Amino acid sequence: ILEKIFMLTVEVSGVKMINVKCDPYKSQEYQELYPFIIPGYHMNKKHWISIKPHKNLTSDFLRDLIGDSYDLVVKKLPLKDQKRLNNQ
Image 1: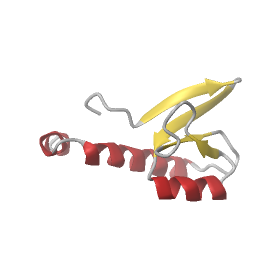
Image 2: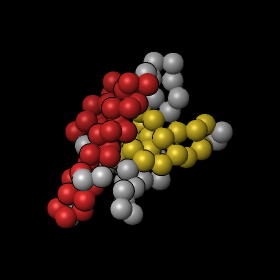
Image 3: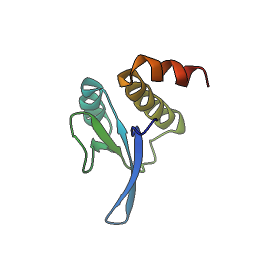
Image 4: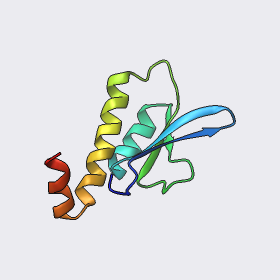
């Protein structure tokens, strides 16, 4: 988003993962609840999580995590850029 990252993919030891930005409180909660969510690989572990493939990972939950990440990044943009994105 305007040169800011909200999601990226990584592969570690043959395992493909998705890194997304996450609220620090939710990040901690998710890591305690879901075995497929770990601290962000090669990212700031307070603000990023890595999501590993897992049979209990639903597409709806993954979509929510990606959407939340996008929203977190947009909130940090200058207001003029936020307005520009909203008008697209």
